[in-house]
Length: 238
Image 1: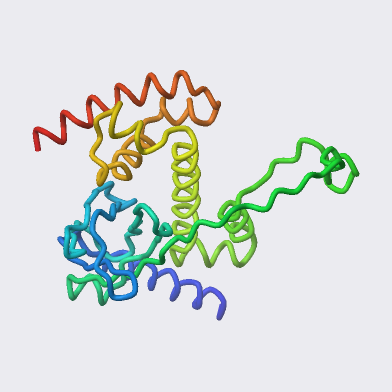
Image 2 (image 1 turned 120 degrees about the vertical axis):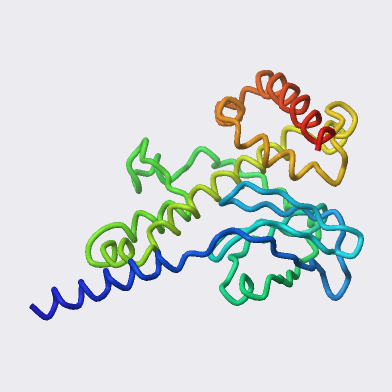
């Protein structure tokens, strides 16, 4: 009986938290790195798909609510992802500090035993599905008592969202590998400061995502050209 009362209390608490979910509102912020204000940083809200870019003073405005995940990306700076906390939502302001991304040369190692893998040695079964870090967290937090508490607390939804965010970040890395900045500016006519925003726009297109996952560069180039045409038209009209 005691356990049932505890579960009912937790469930009612979860229902109360849902009732407290805030609506989107405009939040302003300043992006800096070691006190230097950063211009041209792309801000993307993974929840409502809104995009913003910081101005010359590092300021930006974007619609968001408590619990939304914002992504901050810019040339020469490490990708930053953060949640919108209640106090930030209520104050309507955000302070974001980004880290300069120093480029280091990878060490080249020649390995004549490159064909020796964990699968070949029988350590793990061949053809085993490889989970990403966020997928492993979701899997480990989905079963048993922990899975139940994650469900009623809303943590499971956060874990699922992190998996989706991770997938998009992997797609963005594939795009960075396939297309250089000059391709965006010279061929696709995307302004330098909007490249990141355009990339986020592209990874929302199922057909383009499929071409990236199948490593079909020819199809990706064809689709990204069409996406750029639509994106530039929307941008100019706005």
